[in-house]
Length: 197
Image 1 (cartoon, rainbow, N blue to C red):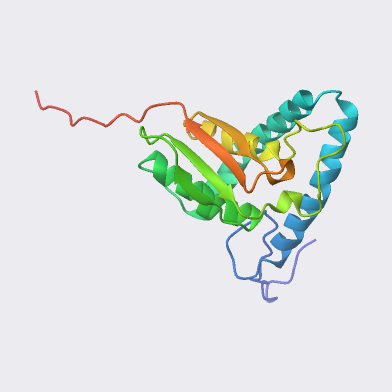
Image 2 (image 1 turned 60 degrees about the vertical axis):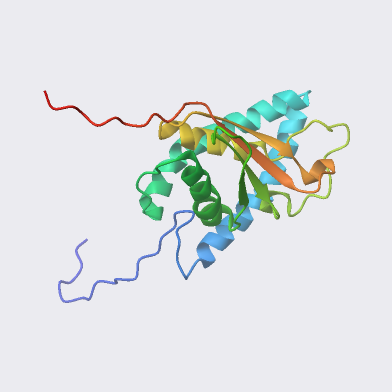
């Protein structure tokens, strides 16, 4: 079916990707809320499916990893980030751009090693636990938000920055803050200038 050629094309484009940095983020806000609501149901189902917390934690990490390896493309396309020059810059981008884009929060970043390859993301607020008061009974070693670790690990691996990502502290377990640790596993080597022969 053809449209009349004199009909004006509608230039208003709706972006259904979650998320983009824009002033009109109502669709993204709705998607974020839907994700938060369904995430609790996902964890509850995994707790029914698996007997041990370790199995649930591994499953959440694997799901997150699979999301991360696909999400990095969307992130790079919408953020305009080109290339980070250091692990410190990478950690800042994760906290100040990625977390802001996808969860609407900005964790603080601290470097926890002299070798400058280990960082902590401190989450004052964690939207994934907005509707959760405590861990399910008998699930004290459950890492409720382990999906986040998998997402970060998967995304970093896709840009050739393998990392160990894990929860260090968790408010759901009585800690004062929620802290995600990122240990970059590959040393950044300074590029030496080529000699003219």
